[in-house]
Image (cartoon, helix red, strand yellow):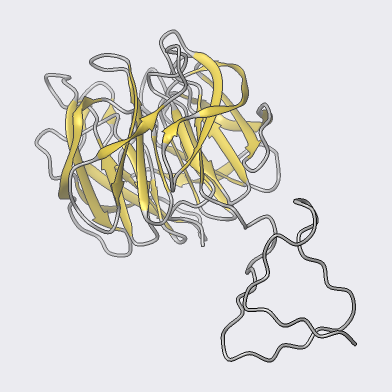
Length: 341
């Protein structure tokens, strides 16, 4: 039996093969050895995906690494041009729905680790514009933004199984122009638009594992409420940024947060770089939140980020895809948001 004595093993074998040991291996060391954890599909997570967007709307799907930054790269295409999509995801599959440009009840999906076009998943119980999609590892919950009047329906689906949604319950206040913040147990929705009255400041939530009506969480601590924000979260903290106020309909630059496991009003977090109506362009890892695009007051293709555990103003991250193909009202999802372990 041969003995291999080394402080470090690097660069042995081809680039693809790496280091290969045949036969029994024993280890005698005063140091530590760390092996990869989780299954192979979990390794390398940290991908944010941006869906549709633009004015006029586009089929573009792009992606970036949340840990780094720069210009988003091409991923694939939606089945049809859409904007203002809301995304939800497990660690491997992303769902999108609630287009404001092509208002219907369709849901599409992508496999997040694999760059490809989206595929039909199934249908929601009704047409939805600018609703919300919340998710944990197993279940997606669709807050149906019914138009022209505002309904209060909540649907759900099992992310791993394509098909039509089932009834979950009802919202406390029927709203649209909303986005979600998720822990593994809760989906929280801040504010929104109730037709024809205007913005609401109500924050509402559901518990993923059960079905039933939404419950009151607290209030958005902003005069007149908010709609069109971008939501994202760590496992413990939910954050929402931008949006539009009432009655002036002006875009705002606020960032607010809540603690997902408790209930209560939102608290000031900081500011984004400009007044922006995000409409679905928020997503995150457990530590970093991304705020992408805007279509109000002008098309903006920038991506900003915040560190979720701290408070402070957003910083520059990079850009959406070039040539103004994905500037305004992109949908967003990730494989490592606060609803996922």
